[in-house]
Length: 236
Ligand SMILES: Nc1ncnc2c1ncn2[C@@H]1O[C@H](COP(=O)(O)OP(=O)(O)OP(=O)(O)O)[C@@H](O)[C@H]1O
Image 1 (tube, rainbow, N blue to C red):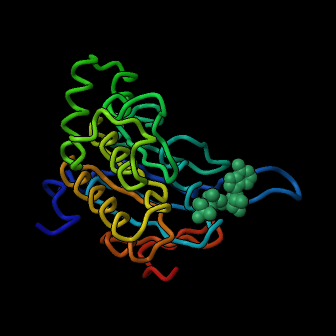
Image 2 (cartoon, rainbow, N blue to C red; image 1 turned 45 degrees about the horizontal axis):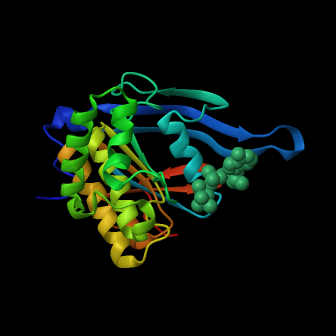
């Protein structure tokens, strides 16, 4: 099966999940203002698997925060036509994988994976069942009872992917999910994200510094000084 082409029939793949029109995000005011994102217009569709590349400070995280609904634009407009409105706080609509440690230390792997579902109101047994299935699909069924401190960095990131999978979102947003991993583990995490997107027929947008990881996705967008250069070859 060709990666990035298996998100279902054409109409489903083309469904717009997020649409940004002339979006800008400025931090601060006056002389100290930083324009992190400016004049960005783009659409993320359900069949998209997009790597966002660009130098440090180019606006990748800001763009993903805007797409996830975690942050608001200073000007411009964001709609989530395929997600039924702002997705932030709705793990079953949009799942986010962050670059750093994101697991809660006192909870074992199974409970960490089930937590967003339980918080979203799913029955606890059902949440755990879906979490166990998701851990199985990332090859971590045997580690369900471990605490986060007993995991390697790569294993912890695979748990973060399982947590997204368990919630079955329509959009997966990953902000530098491999930043702290060696190349073998990084490739494994990116492939798991791609497999998750295919399995869920979900859109995937991932920020990365790493050209090798970006190259694993079929579409690359590049950011430079807050501007989005869509479809450009990855060069950073
Ligand atoms: N909360 C904030 N307050 C002020 N400036 C900020 C804030 N967050 C980000 N910035 C600035 O906005 C710009 C874009 O930052 P952003 O984190 O989006 O870039 P990035 O491409 O994700 O960087 P990195 O690859 O280093 O994570 C940078 O100049 C950064 O310093």
